[in-house]
Length: 266
Image (cartoon, rainbow, N blue to C red):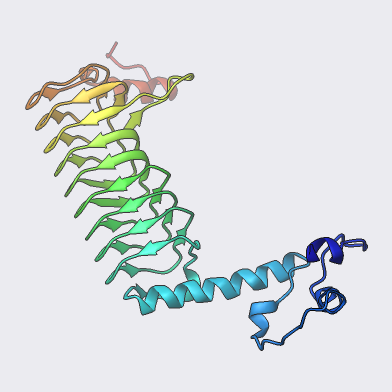
């Protein structure tokens, strides 16, 4: 009733709080006074004021995280969401951004320049630096996601390692598995997403492409530089690359031809 009585017939089409006093008096109600800090009642009428309000909120969230037992090395460079959950003895290095829906459990380390959104980071997990956790990423206890690694809609098992330059999407990685640098799960065929399942204690060599849908068995090895399109049984070695070919003297002859010199090689 009071809201309707206040109205918003003004240039800004806003409901002004001071008008509530006059309306309350007309209704025979009493108006009281409460003292508050400027931050509590600050107005937001433009983008500058919005940035000021965000800065005030970030300071509150950072202080709350630290008082609850987290260590922020450079608090002013860490940006949190209102729903960010951070456990005790978590260490957060400079320049980390937490989007909505992030949970970080006790003892985890978030290294510099990482971006997390919709992700769960388990106990003792190490993330980054320069890591990106997208919605649906779950990192179980003791796992590691290193520099320039992107995880999306994937479950990373306890103690698994994805240390360098990889994309793991729509996947599960078993406990204690090792994913080599440059590995990607090829999860999108242009129309639909497909899953990659990697068993525990598997070893995926560097620069491998796992073309989903696909299953890599427990304890299996994937040779470096492979493109894997079929399921790999447990404890098997899979290689999916062209055989190396050598042509002795070819390079010397190639250079000579470009310099106009005749050689005996063909």
